[in-house]
Length: 127
Image: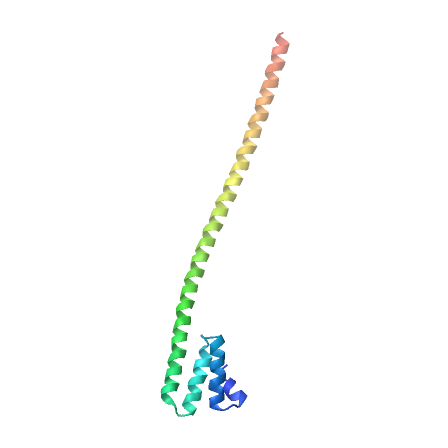
């Protein structure tokens, strides 16, 4: 957007008006503040240029602060995801162990049935 002023070939006053119009819709447009400052500088309105650049710098600082907040949120979400993945691994391990216990229980049940059948056959022979 910084090249927009040069590409349009507008007067500095028109450029200021256009960038201010954009700022009405996008108040955090750093490039708009910057280009307003450039335009004011070309008009030898240095105090206005400095004010516009200070606005741009303020927006940059706010964006940087928000970026840090977002990075902290991303880091927290990554940590929570890792916890969930660990929990999922724990669940998988628990399911695997439960399947092993089920298989062992089935083997014991089969053994108990065989012993019962053997006992019933022995009783029948004794009768």
